[in-house]
Length: 113
Length: 112
Image (cartoon, rainbow over all chains, first blue to last red; front, side, top):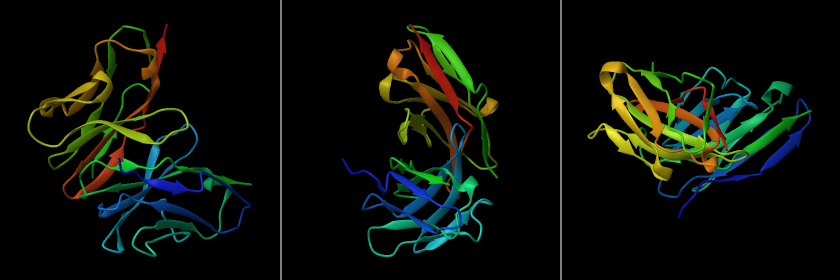
C-alpha cells in the first residue's frame, strides 16, 4: 500500500540554524500539506501546495518558512532560522484532490536547542 | 472560514463500554468531515469520512459517525471499547474550496 514517507525521523538543531524537512508524498497525489504539532497540543495547519505553488498558508507560516517541490517526488519544508518554539512534530500529508482524505507521514520530530 | 470544536479533551471509558467522542463543526458551505486517530508516537490515520450521501458512515476498527446537519455535529461512536482504542482522536473539516482544519483532539483512555 502506498504511503507518505518523511526524513529524518528526528532532527536536533541549534537555535538560528536552518533545517530542511523532507517528505515523499504518494505518487499520484496532487496536493501536499505540512502540519505542526507541538507536544501535547493540536495538529496545526501550516501550508498547502498544489501545481508548484502555495495554495493556502496559515499565520504560523511566516517568512522563516518555505516549501519546495525540487523534483517529481520530494516535498520539503525549510525553516531558515530556527527558534526554540519551532520544536514540534512536523507532519507531511498528501491527497488526490483538495478536499479528499489526506494521508499522513509518520512525522519528523524537530528539537531546537 | 471553517472550524471544528471537540468537546472534552479527555474521555475515559471502561473496556466494553460505549465510546462517544463529540465533534461540532462550523462551515458556510457543505462540509466534508473526517475522524483521524493518532496512536502514541505515530502519525494520523484516517478512521472514517463523510463527503456526500449516507449520513451514517462506518470506519475501521468498529467506529462509526453520523453527520447531523441540523446539529452541525459529527460525533464518533463505538459500541464496545477495547484497550487498543486508547489514542488521540481528531475531528477535521474541509470542503471543495477549503483545506482541512483539525479540532484540538480528544484523548481516549480505556480502563480495564
